[in-house]
Amino acid sequence: MEQAERPGLDARPATDVLRLGVLEVRPRDGLATIAGRALTLSVREFGLLVAFVRSGGGIVRRDDLYREVWGGRLRSGDRSIDVYVHKLRVKLEDAVPGTRWIHTHVGFGYRFEPEPFTPFSHHGHGSATG
Image (tube, rainbow, N blue to C red; front, side, top):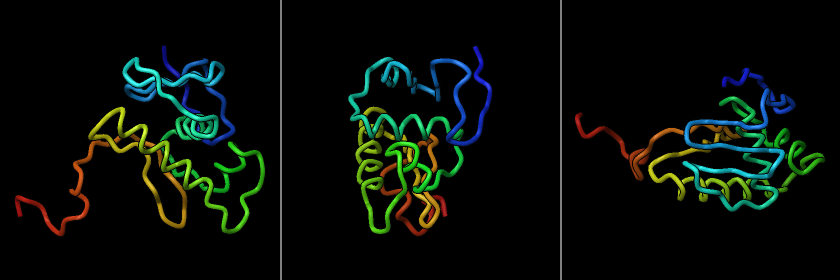
């Protein structure tokens, strides 16, 4: 079963299930699983996850996430999105070690796409092969 690509946060899935690799999200049921194991998420974390999966891998602005998940306008200095994104990031990375799901784009927002990573590999100044 294929799901049509629908860019943007206001897009609704063609089915009741959103899938991205081993991640499965059922927005109507409030359920999310990774490789068949249920994730324990708060209401805000689940809302962020749904918005991220629906974004199709594009960068999602913090303002748009706030509007989608909190239902209002983001006020200057409000760091609640950053706190909940961090919590969600930790839970996803704990569930699938070696995979980075949420990527921060400073000054723009966040991008949601599972990519393999090795801890500390992004801090180096060169590769092991030269």
